[in-house]
Amino acid sequence: MTRGLGRILAARETGILIALIAIVIVAATINPRFVTSADGWRDLLLTPSLVLLVAVGSAIVIITRSVDLSVGSVVGLTAYLTGRLFIDIPGIHPVLVFVAGVLLGAVLGLINGALVAFARVPALVITLGTMYIYRGINVSWAGSDRINASDLPSGFRALGTGSIGSGPFASIPYLTIIALIVLAAAAWYLRNLRGGRELYAIGSDPAAAELYGLPVTRRIIIAFVASGALSGFAGVLYAARYGTVASNAGSGWELEAIGAAVIGGVAIAGGVGTVWGAAIGAFLLLTINRALPIIGIDDFWQQAVVGALILGAIVLDRVLAVRRHRQRIAQREETR
Image 1 (cartoon, rainbow, N blue to C red):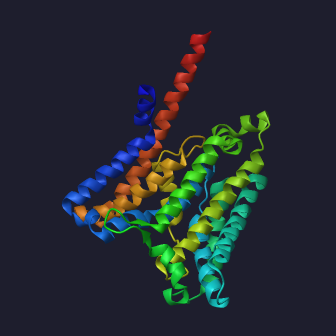
Image 2: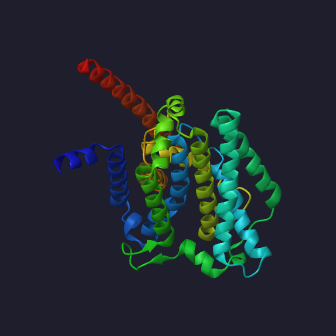
Image 3: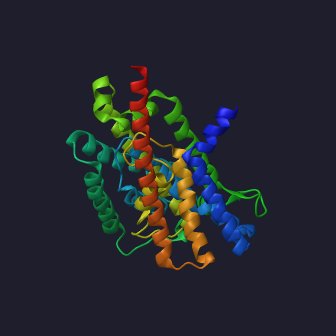
């Protein structure tokens, strides 16, 4: 039990969680309404939930030593698709809209994965190109039009704004519950199923994984499909959450998702990290954005703090990787 507790306390995710709690405490001390008001508690849980979904997909890709810069564009494209389906097909069931959004996201992710896996071009280059292509399609499709809340069914919008329970601390938004369910499913897959463990092996050493006989190409494609599907799912929920959808929906989310994953302990070099860490990183980033204005820090320094966190996480990952390498060398020498 003591060993297990020590392992938990030493985990990277625990440190990020402590930082998140500390920021909430400081902001709540300066302005109690940050947490105690119904809107403050609701925003604290609701705002990061959509980014959490995208961050989980980004984490899965990063674990394989790749990166997906197109997730924000996928969110925007599927969010606009959601509104168009409700407008162009009156009475369509919301379940079909969710299926359409997830399928579109999965197809866009499949395009990314296939190009990365078969063309042997770095994922950074491929997804940078598809990011602009998907965004261009969305801008061309939407034009100057936008989806308004009045175009969406009230029951669908309630999914993005409603909650279970009542009271400041007893109310949990539906979006947060959905995000946590997806998070738990992704974490279970990565930890317990062979396919999830193979993603870590591929990220640790792609060449060795291929020599060992692992289906590297297929796993990389699956990782990108999962990222696209989760972004598509987040796009549908984006429409439910905000009601208004324009051509710039999801803009910049790719940086928030990747930043959340990296800050949460997912090594940019691949093979290390958990989706739990990415989720905590998403909450940390969004909470910082809400807390710093309350503390009295201006916009420039808000962005600087987030950038410093990302750089610090990358440096820490490098230091830990060097330490692990030295420990392995020391263990080999001891066994000789």
